[in-house]
Image (cartoon, rainbow, N blue to C red; front, top):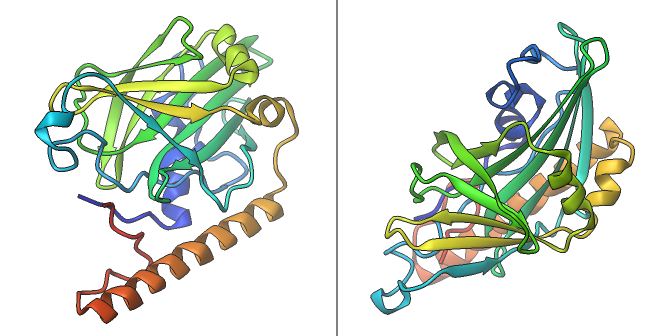
Length: 257
């Protein structure tokens, strides 16, 4: 099973500031249209690791660790900020996309920080975009370097992946992410086998505490990413034509193996 990677404007609606309503705390007004309409992380393409279609019965025992790496065209974690004009809430999110060893999109991580000076409130939300094919009811659990875990729940699914999130996250969790090495995100696949995505945290603290990215720079990054996706799709199309197979739709990411 495989999925295509959504276009930049679709990704913006999925994980960007415009989609924050799913995670906003009741005490803070729901963001309407923050100033920037910046693109956000891509959706995961492959089916969840450890599903019956991906593994043999002999491999269905015990927890599975899936190491991921940063999307090659995304040099580092990206911080994007805006303001909800209705409530006056300052909203920033620090985000990054991750792929498998084969370069297939696996998941995206976004850590939100919402501050309202007038209400003297500060809310942190951690959101993930994960592959389809996972059990929704158990939810997720994540920790930094094996420390105490934080539970989260699945919020909504789209054809290209499912959101999972933890709202009202303690400041200590974000502090651990700044100093930590690996963010472990655990879920269950369709056979109730635990699958843990090992997400590298290098550079997260610097990006989270640093300035927001310039909109022009972000736009250039997205153009570069889109060009890379189109190149991959074209290379796959040519390869399939040489093999006598059907070519994928334009702009689609290569199918997961």
